[in-house]
Image (cartoon, rainbow, N blue to C red; front, side, top):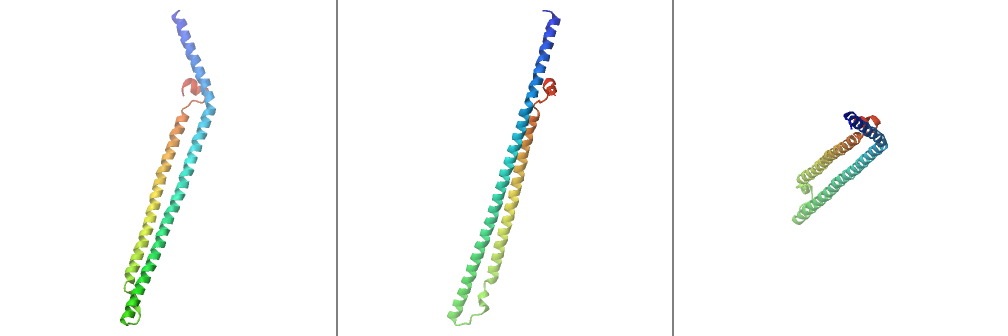
Length: 167
């Protein structure tokens, strides 16, 4: 076989393979469209799950703070009752009239109550902020994953030109 015949066969084979690649790329259009839909659905599902988790976590933070406030109110009420009863009993046993002497520990009780309430508030705010930061980083990771997957799908040839010529 002559050089020209061999070259012609090689060029013909190359052209045929490029044509087949071009036709094959045309067949990818529907698959690429479906892949992008799937990526978007997956992304939306992950975001919905993340926002549901966020809502539940926010509710738990609020419930915990409310529980702490209720416990603090109950404990403070009980302490005040005990102080007043002790003061009244002590005064009655010593023959004194009951007066303002039951306020002996009132300032300490109020300070403790205010400190505890402030701690509950600060903890709640810290937990909310921590949750927001965590959610934001998870959103960024999900968006990054979506972008990477979409970029991979975008590299799949979908036109005759892209398939035959490689661009």
